[in-house]
Length: 246
Image (cartoon, rainbow, N blue to C red; front, side):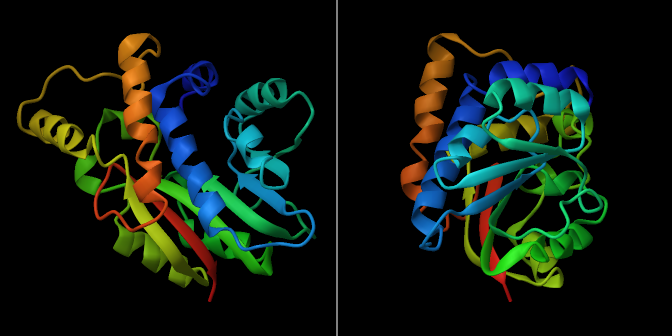
């Protein structure tokens, strides 16, 4: 990701409809699909970025955040105020050694990696036998846009491709659902139209946050948690998966 986007992420993480909506959906999915646990759940957020999800994850256990980019890690440090252990490192070579976790999360990270299967294998090695991997990825290659280029994505995932990568890495899917489904039609129409009729395209999909439109989109997107965290929704701009070891 271009370093200028880290400042944008840090500003928007707490107020932009897309980040708020995804966080609401992930939170509800975790509540519904995490295994019961006696004691404290150890959580690794691999590729924690500017730390927007770390405080939410603290509701479920003791959190460690891992991030490769120092600029993003500085934002995460300021955001969490020392309440979360933060490590600088990449995936898979910079993962903590000699530790195990009951939960590993990766939110829109896997699509950045050149070797996703190798990353999954490395993360699996850090999981306890009943540990879970929860991840989100952008969905459907035909939705590719300038936003994906700017964010240095390697791919957008279908459920089939993600399931195959997880299986090759030794994981199986226990629950899946596409999300950001309400806006799937408009997003698909705009992106397909841009392929046919090229023109100016925004540098990223986030835009500015604030105002009535942002509030309305937050409510609309967040409401998907009542469905996407319970049943497999068959389409959406993004994809959520809960996986365990095979």
